Length: 370
Image (cartoon, rainbow, N blue to C red; front, side, top):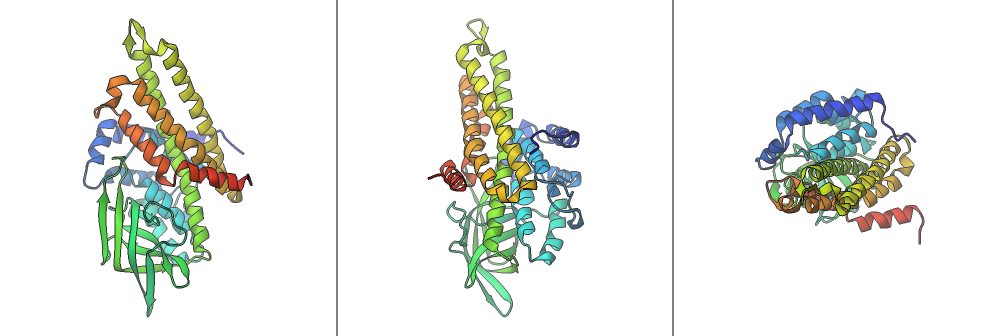
């Protein structure tokens, strides 16, 4: 197992970090998160031009042919600056879903190159009432004379308000299956939801006789499980990036903020708190690198690695973000400071794929613990 990035991977990090420093500073993040679209289309096209949107897509399908370690690097950098972006929805969830549909080469050939280029924004609609339901939930798909239509509600759907392509997991008479729905399809109603994290967009998608194209997979449920596991790894990368930047900003403030003639970082309570942040981040990086390597080289071990990543990294990021708010004192509680944005991202991300307790239970099952 390789836990240290090589020179090419570090170069990828440097390139993405420079782009985001120029195009997604704090002021731009606040502007974009309050915009109607919720992300910067120019930055999205730039990420497509860099090949960042198709890192796990094979070259013959329009991607970069890299891997999950490289995608995790991009997610770390996006997480560092809290970039409002549909990357997790499109370049992770939708892309991985299409790659997992092992019996639908035409759909993959038609859609993956466009997702990788940034021509399409995709997402998946699986959750109902916040739960990732492997049964398809209450959303149903009915077919007649080769035409399929969907009825039901999926919520919350990541980037569901702006996605051009929605991959829906729904029930049929023969079991759950995947369907592709165009973002402007007749019978599809999209309602933007107000969430805790203003930098991440969610929507409720309502289907009423909505036309859908069935997508073939040998085991639709197994495909969904793979999508969720890979999403857990990418989300962990985003959390590690946010965790690192929250720690850096806190340490910088502790060095500069003077109280009673001394920098507050010289006081033991603050000093030890910052040291705890660093130790937690170092452990999180190791867990992430192991999970990303496993996604590329040991797929049977992915479920356990993904569960471990979310079991540890989600709560660790939230604890770091909480410390960031507290160590910044009064200013850390204001809207003008970015501390509250890291705090909200940390808590919402911790729950995005289910609460930590669910990940712990899944990890215990993989370890065969009583």
